[in-house]
Image 1 (cartoon, rainbow, N blue to C red):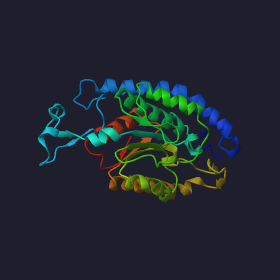
Image 2 (tube, rainbow, N blue to C red; image 1 turned 120 degrees about the vertical axis):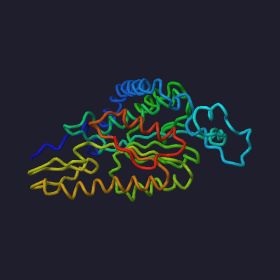
Image 3 (spheres, rainbow, N blue to C red; image 1 turned 30 degrees about the horizontal axis):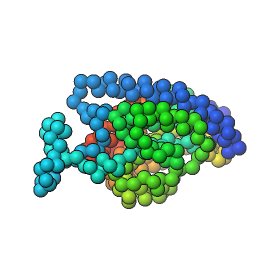
Image 4 (cartoon, rainbow, N blue to C red; image 1 turned 135 degrees about the vertical axis):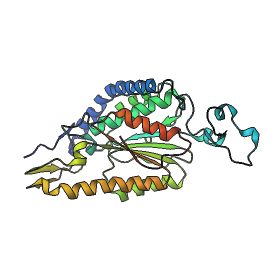
Length: 305
């Protein structure tokens, strides 16, 4: 039968301990990689007229006619052609929450990929933590840390991840309030209705989310032919296709439709949706996320990397 890729760790529920140990072993090396990516990205920004790393995200908003002139931040306004005021209510409340999906489907890695989806998700989240921490931002991880500010924020989160109990559940988002940003990194392969139900309360509270979809190239192109056995990494269920190529068109249509529905749902809420393929550099998604976080408005359409 065709080789459809590999799982980077056991995926049967009874082997959760082995999976957790494998996850913990990955984190230190991924932290090093995350810092390398951040340094590369910052070097690429050197000399450009771009909002700086040391400047709080969403701290400023455009001036509205009729507001008190003494609220204008003239230093910030001098940097471009717009007039800005400092949003002090935002500044007092703002936290960027980070989360990488730990579910078994994230362990997948095809021969075409540079990393498993789990590795890419963790690298991206740690890179975001590093970038934000260098800028003095307050960060947190739901069900893992309270909001904090520290120059070694990525290192602190990595240490907590190493010792965190194994969990496949989505985190409780009830602590995330208005003015907060939430960065979610996942393959988002759950039924879209489940994802909408999970995030809808967040949108109603006035929080803002940035979804980063991690996609293995084989999951998107479905390059399989002949007799192929597929295994659900979440349940262990198997499906054997006599001629897998006959499934390709319908599969690709459903896979892309899921992505487009998620992206459209995010757009309607002013959220950003980014796709990062595991055969592409993680830095591409980091740059797009930084643009979404630091813009005066959120991205208005999904961006693929």
